[in-house]
Amino acid sequence: MNEMTAKHNTGIVFYKRTQFYAILLPVAFALGLGAGYLLWGSQAEAAAAQKAQPTSAAAQQQEVKRYDVSEDDDPVYGPDSAPVTIIEFSDYECPYCSRWHSEVFLKLREEYGKKVRVIYRDFPLISIHGEALPAAIAADCANEQGAYWKYHDLLFSGGGEFGRDTYLMYAAQLGLKMDQFTQCIDTEKYSDEVMADYQYAADLGIRSTPTFFINGIPVVGAQPFNVFKEVIDKELAGEIP
Figure 1 (cartoon, rainbow, N blue to C red):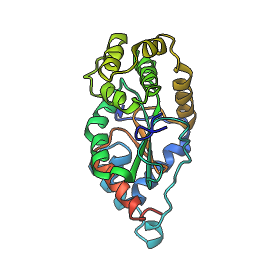
Figure 2: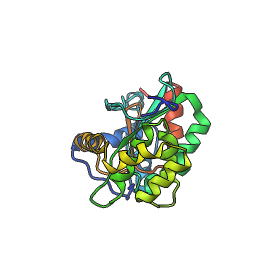
Figure 3: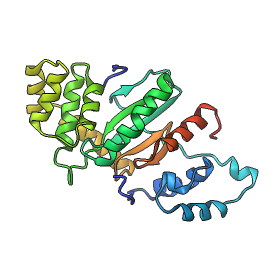
């Protein structure tokens, strides 16, 4: 699907699968990033841990663990030919996800253009975000009319405004067919689709939003632009084993 193709970081993240957690630290060092980039903790702790790592050529060439994460049939921004794919698991009501959208996602689109494609997969934290599921459904309803990414941008830039009236207002702003859109959100047409994404992410071991996989390499939390830039640039240069 194409529009270009349509379909918290709270500081501590818990994972169901200990293997997923355990692999993040060697990934950080293999990429030459501070542990604070992909994990949490102070810069001092990260520096001390990095200093303790072996400095042999073999250690430098340590293979990075890449996860085989399904794209499903979810919305894609960017061309299929892009050499870097970022799969994002996110929640429209999550303030950290909104911050990442405004501070990183828009800059990635501007700087990398057709070199990067982003796939948005839903991970609504329904136990703490009452509008996360309805907002995700509304975005999928907009996707029916080819307006997923424009609607996605409105949800994340709306200053925390949610609810049925807001979803209808955004649809009207984008010139969508209102009868079709209204029926779609009122019947919760895409609820099963959204929750299937949620279950897939939970089974993978994801417990917080946003969580990303850059060509399968995990990055946890609303990390700053330079973190994504470093990983993407190394990928484009073929520097990551």
